[in-house]
Amino acid sequence: MPDPKVVIVGCGFGGLFAARALRRAPVDVTVIDRTNHHLFQPLLYQVATAGLAAPAIAEPIRRILGGQKNTRVLYGEVQRVDVAARSVILEDGEALAYDHLILAAGATDSYFGHDEWRAHAPGLKTLHDAFEIRRRVLLAFEHAEREHDPARRAAWLTFVVIGGGATGVEMAGMLAEIARHTLKGEYRRYDPRNARVVLIEAAERVLPPYPPELSEHARIQLEHIGVTVWLGRRVSGIDAAGVQLGGDLSGSTNRTLFVFGFGVNVPFKQRFFADLGYRFGHIASKSTDDETLSSIPTQRIILGAGIRF
Ligand SMILES: Cc1cc2nc3c(=O)[nH]c(=O)nc-3n(C[C@H](O)[C@H](O)[C@H](O)COP(=O)(O)OP(=O)(O)OC[C@H]3O[C@@H](n4cnc5c(N)ncnc54)[C@H](O)[C@@H]3O)c2cc1C
Image 1 (cartoon, rainbow, N blue to C red):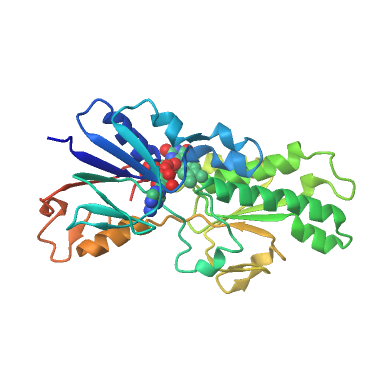
Image 2 (cartoon, rainbow, N blue to C red):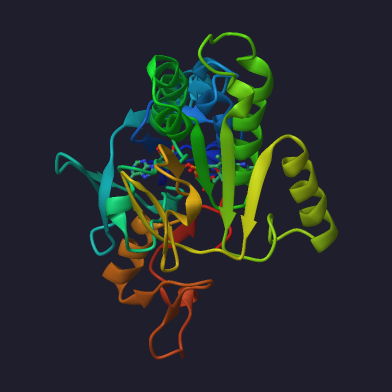
């Protein structure tokens, strides 16, 4: 009898650890990812701010799992899961059969229903995002050097980071470091240390999941290295002219050039559960509330645990 087929969708932390855990199991593993690399997301901000090169945080999946005999790696994007047929459907319509499915497709950015903000405020989840942010940041300093008008130059040198979670705090801190140290002395028309970095957080403190004293410590450190921290202020609009805070247009950021959005969305899993008639939340439950995930008895479907919901 052939070994059971395990399909793992996504090779981030969750998918990779699942594949590794199965390396000696009598199963036939297929790992599918829409990129060809495993990415160490916690250091993405370093690539986005030119502190690290991409290969330092990304490794070809094929190379990582190449020596694992029971595993093959496929480059492809899973569009949906056909639970009845026990197969995943790829972008070109190919169906890939499974006996057990591990969904570890991670998260994407959430713009809280405002996808039009994306063009002005790139998120930071992929290498592509990091390259785009790096391009915009470095070019802003170049444009500022060519700008004659002081107000317009100040606008090029204003960076707004939205969201005071770990990523936003790291990004804001790195931008301030670049302006104050990395680029010091490299421009003639202005002093990069005068660049303005604003971190906007809707909650009353940065790093809300952490103990209040650590949040306060982080805020003080950020202010110390030159970041302006705005707490309790919710962004209600983003366009090419700036950021809108509540009804207060641009919140005095003038013409802000760069904004980064940081929310979390899990569209793949939401879609998957919707297909099954399940609601998506902290725990999957059927609308009637009388059944749980274990009420899908016919097959084992494991959700990647790399993200907290
Ligand atoms: C900037 C940043 C900083 C972070 N810092 C920290 C930190 O300091 N500490 C910490 O603990 N956590 C941190 N995290 C969170 C941590 O990186 C995530 O929790 C973790 O990566 C989630 O792992 P995962 O396997 O669920 O998803 P991911 O690592 O996102 O992997 C998902 C994989 O699925 C693939 N994929 C998605 N959809 C499809 C599809 N339809 N078909 C095929 N493949 C698909 C993607 O290409 C990706 O390779 C950070 C995250 C970010 C973005």
